[in-house]
Image (cartoon, rainbow over all chains, first blue to last red):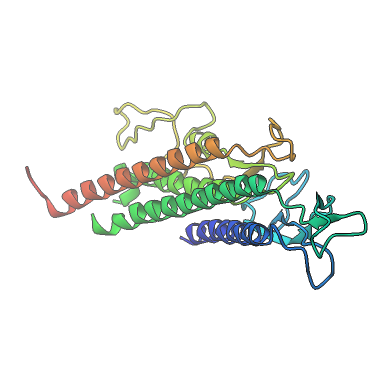
Length: 143
Length: 145
């Protein structure tokens, strides 16, 4: 049943990809008000970039085996402008009295978190179905 | 007498082909689900059921076999036991139905439905295979009811 194991590997790659997405989103939410970073300036929202493993992208055509799952190519910064809040009394305020807050929108992060969580569950279901199918095949030995 | 010649051969071959085809399709569906958030991903599918039907048919399109061991018995077309066409399902990339702004054409609901359907199909085929072997066991042990 090598196929069955490989399909569990495929789903496992989906699990770790969605887990990484949830980690990054949690970090975005945790830093939603962080105005200081080692790089200077406000925290920048981060995003995960995905790619299919064993890349059969574009006009891949036909092959004997499905792709090998998903992998995260990297974590990139969202370079959209900071959220500016007028607060001249704040020690972080710039010359015009604006404080640069991260470009993190909590509502958007929550929606992304929900999408990642649902995708995680979908991968878990795929693994469970894998197991059901192997169990049915193994049941042949018991009959 | 060869065990394939007693009529088990084609059925067991067909059922095991069906199970391995469902296995491959499961891998393709799992890959689609794993890549649900990958931009520009094209969904994959395995159309093994058409191939399964083709592997069971002879050149005339007949799929039922009646084996004969006497000239006076009725013969029929179909593929003799153990001589079914080779069964080699392939993964296809689906380039149609782009429905998402990120360029992917994976519909996760449809994939979950296919996953469930394919799993049920595979388990049914396993069950049928186990019935075949139970019959064979009955024949071997001369079990009577």
